[in-house]
Length: 168
Ligand code: AMP
Image (cartoon, helix red, strand yellow):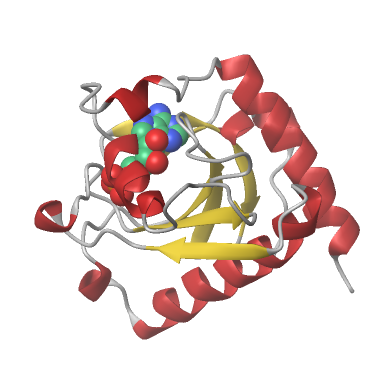
């Protein structure tokens, strides 16, 4: 794995139909990328995506599947203590009926703390809402769409975190 360089911020990556600037990519492997989130459900909620633009988990090759989950594990292991968390939620919404809003395979990785949601499974409602353009529930109004600068700043922090953890 290598973390992405901040020197090529003009380059764009594809997340389904969305152009993601290099500045919002905090790590990459030959087959996968780590992105900061436009609307994080909790602090440190990031996305691990396949580099290839495919909608469904079943579209991934075995190598892409292994790479995606290996990167998700590596990122989760780093961000859990960084965000003062003690657990992680890993989630894929695989297809529109499962709540997928961006038709590109992605693993949600969320640092979790005791009591961060009144009812633990609320996290899945929040994840489902996070891709929606409309503010369907009142809960959603609490989550803010971040600026490109805020996202780039977090990506820099996470890049440094992943760099520092190499070899550990
Ligand atoms: P899902 O509903 O499982 O498809 O998740 C889509 C995720 O993509 C949500 O967590 C959104 O907050 C996130 N998202 C949508 N647009 C962007 C974007 N431009 N940059 C980063 N994350 C995004």
